[in-house]
Structures are given as structure tokens and as C-alpha cells.
Image 1 (spheres, each protein chain N blue to C red):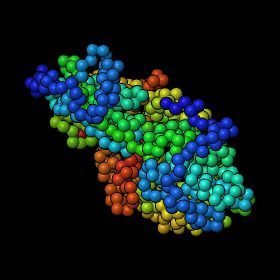
Image 2: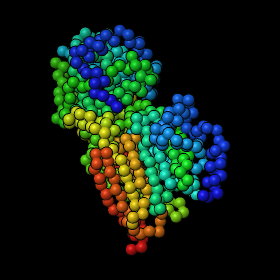
Image 3: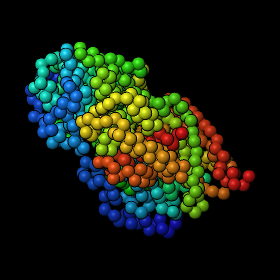
Length: 314
Length: 268
Ligand SMILES: [Zn+2]
């Protein structure tokens, strides 16, 4: 059970506690790749296609920041407090402008736990309106599991959003650039937030776009297929996927993901129609996609399970 | 008592007081010893078996919120009841079933939540009241897998909706069926998206399937059952009467529904 009081509030007191802990963080091990400037003022660290471990300190997702005229926006903050502290160091090596916005794209630990490294900056923590309940249900579970791998100090606290984005979306203005945030219906998860810099034609779909690394389904399969169409319709010239290369062209990058998800839907529907049980389907459905993705065997079975429990009620 | 069962019982008595399968680390063994007394009573003697009861579950739980478990019991073993225990869960007894004359305990499929690395125990009650158990070890996986599904709250919308599916290929004398029940099976860890309050635990406590007054099975269940409980079971064929399903939950809600037997479709 997760008592609400165990989740660190992002109050001033919480922020101060966070600050007190920064000094005793282990040195981030995953500093090797550094950040790359994918567009003017936009810096991204490409995450490795690996699972969280002691070496990478949970830093497996693409994370980064946007330096604006007035302020810095972070998205995503990283996979642990240690990963976030490393990212914060990269920011401070480039600018001393205030870090005012930390956008947490969704509930998954490799994107969210870096927020703990930014508490002392007292930014607004921006998330989908459904991120709070998702973190409430899973945050402590994730924190404990990650702590078994990285140690509790490196993982840091569960940080709740202080600014929630509803169905109407919102805009964050950094002075010289406006970023449009969109809260998606259930797709990769139930709390996916994407960001668009319309002027630069740059889309930040976070984990709504996986490139090369097998996607993980944790929201709605039919929903995700629909959101891919919506993302493509935005007509952005470039995108920063949640996993994969730091910068891609949206159309060609979305196509393999759409094919995988459509195959998953088709083969799981066929398994349900044939009376194949969920456990057996997990070993066979979408197996033909194995050669197209890294970490396929670690996630495909789970994706089938997710798809099956969604589609069996159709 | 069938001869085979007597033989099996002797083997069980001779075996070392150890557990047939599952993870044998001292902590896990003592956890199971504690659980046997807590769940089955101070006098419970549960003998290990590798033949009378077998369990299958994925060694690595790909989705901690939905781990499919299938239990098989030997024909002629005289099994009258089956319990499934998820040792390390906060509510370890996932389900306890009693089989009636229209039922068949040879195959059973359930879906459970797992909170981490755990043994799963299937305990069979035999006609003479004795109990035997087998176990399998399941590793909860990391990554984005968690015992709470993100869409669990949505299952509230159609709570009590049921479906029954029939499949070919059951063992001699029995048919295969799957009962699906829409129910969030809240374990108290889910937060309501609008009110921001933790949804109190609310879960399916009883499922009974019968036909023409004859029991197929009656199940008691707890928070370790996955959201939207799905039960794969066997029933005795050669009866055209419809199935009656009744479901109750911890809030006192009750639902019941009738499903025509597949035989009736053939004979009509
Ligand atoms: Zn994700």
C-alpha cells in the first residue's frame, strides 16, 4: 500500500530536503555520451538501448533541455536523481539561466525519477492531469525496485507534478520560444504528454515514439495507433523520440512503430478469436517482429498481455 | 479411494518435509510454513507433490498486474478443492475453489497480481480431506511493469459485465470454458483521477458457476486476483442446461447472469 504521505510533496520544505541530499549523490556513471545540440538551444542525451543498471544509473531514455531567453525547460529530467543531477550539471556547464520548468512526459521511471535532482531549483513540475494518480499508484513500487538496482540515494524521491495539463493543453513561454504541450488520451501510457515547438517544426513526442528499441505498451493499443496519426498530422519536420536516435524525421520514424502496433493488434485479435489463452499468445503473437527491434524478448510478451486484456473485451 | 491416489499419498508421506518445487531459499520456505497455518489453520498438514498438482506460470512475470497461472490436477486424484497462494503478496490467498458434480478440477486458469519475486503455491484438497501442494517461482520484472495497471480505474465503468466463452478440445468427458468478469478489483492502491483520493479496496469475493442447480465450482477470491477476473475452467459435458453465474464483491454488490450451454446450440 502507498500512503499518500510517503510521496514527497513538492513544497518548499520538500525542495530544501532535496537540496540537502544533492551533495551526497554518487557521481553519475552515464555521463559518457554527453548531450548533443539537435536544434538551436535544444540539447538531448541519447539513452542507450538497455535496461536500468548500476552503470547507467537508470539513464536509458532520451532526456534533455531547451535553453530559452528567460529560462531553461527540462524534458525529461532523467531515470534517477543521479541521472537528473548529471543532466543538471550539463545545463549549468552551458548556462546559468533559471531552470523554471521540468516537464515529466509520463509515469515511467526512466523518464520521471530525474525530477528529484531539480527540487532545489524550485521549478514547476509539469505533467499530464493523469500523471498524479499514475505516480500515486506506482511511484513507490518503482522507487523500491529501482533502489534495489541503483541504491535508494541514487533513485531519489517520487516527485509529483505541480502544474497539470488537461485535455486543452497548455503553452510554456521561454521568452523567445513558445512550447505547446498536449495531453494525450491513453496510448503508450494513460498520462502521455507531448511538446511541440511549432516555429522550429520540432516535436517532442517522448515515449509515443520509440525508434529501434521495442516499444512498451502500458496504456491503450488502439489509442496509441490513433495518437500516432495525430502526431504525424502535426507536420513537424523533426522529432526527438523517447528512445532511439536523438533526432529523427517523424514520418519514416513513425512507420515501423505503427507497423509493430498494428501487427500486435491483428495477431492478438486472431489469438483471442481462436481461443488461444493469454499466456500462450504472449509467446507467439507479433513474434515475426523480433528482428526489427532491440530488447524484443524483454517487452513483446508483456505487450501481448496488455493488448490481449484490452482487446478481449471488444 | 482410487489406487493411484493411495500410492501417491504413500510417496508423499515418505518424502522429506520439503517443497516439491518453487524457490527453496530459507526465507521463502519459512514464509510458506507461516502461510499454511494462517490460511489453512494450525493443524494444516500440506504434503508436497509433483504429480497430483502441477502449476505453470511465466518464470519472468512480464506484466506484474496480470500473471496467467494454470493449474492441472491428476485424473482420479479425487480433488475436491484448489487454492492458489501468491506467497509474497499482501493478500496472499488469491483464490480458493470448491468443485461440484458438474465441475472438473483437472484444469484451471487464473490471473494474478505479483508484487515482486514470489513462489506461487497451488494447494489441492483431496476427497479424504488431506492437502497436497506444488509450487512455481515467479520473478516480477522491472521496467514499466507494476502490480497496478494504469487503466484499472476504467474497469469500474462496466462493473459486473460478464462473458462466457467455450472452446473445443477439452479432456475426455469435459468441455473448456472461460468466464470473464468486468471488475476493477481495487486493492486500495489506485487513486481516483478526479477526486485524487485513494479508491478503497473493492474486489470480487465470490464467483459461483452452476448448471441446473448442480455446482461447477464456487470460488472465494481476494485482492491478488488481477483486474477483470478471467477464469478458465472445465465442466462436465452431456448437459444442455444453461450455466448460471453469480458474482459478489467486497462492497456487497451482486451480479448474476445465465449463459446457454454450447450443447444446446448443437442439439437445437
Ligand atoms: Zn515509457
